[in-house]
Length: 292
Image (cartoon, rainbow, N blue to C red):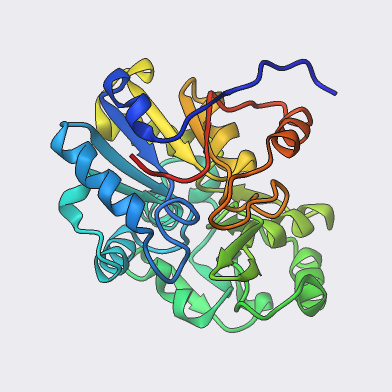
């Protein structure tokens, strides 16, 4: 086991709000479950706004930021409740539209989309062209699965892409996501398999540092003035800690089964200790849910 200092367990964000001027807030598993927004999360956003705390939403959604904002509004989350929104999909779009580094500039224009059909338009307006077959493509745009696919279902397709030595852009580094009570494979799982096949992958989103630099630039605060909140140890906690931020780990999110979260009961502290003792990045604080 790693040597680690146990994080402080808090009941809600109210215990911390006076210490920070900004919050970098995860969405899925913290603010909503993919279908409905959590009432406590909405009320907490209202309180943070009333206290002048700026919120930057930072999501590994493989969608444009305006699309995610529209979806949030349908869930009852008014755009006035947050100052900024950054998505991994928006980071991908900007990287390909602007091509400011050699890797993205060398990709070529034609891409094969690996993911659900409704995400195929992520690069519209970026001067890139979608093609129907891997052999016609210069690179792969990976936005995940269609919600029903397994890794076995995609093995032949990934093998073909690897044999063509196509570079892959991963528009969502998450491995899985919980939609309601269903767990769905995300683009990160496909990207990891592709790397195991020898493929080259460039990730956009958490836990990678450019996502946090962008969020911090938008907020305009120093690192010690910003609190991160998220439910994934692999992306939210690791990304925030590597960026030099304090972070609240929401226990009853993506890790709820491992931590024995039983609604409306609490997570099991012994399981939390066992889980965190295996991690290299330890959260500063732990809360069951995102609430005031």
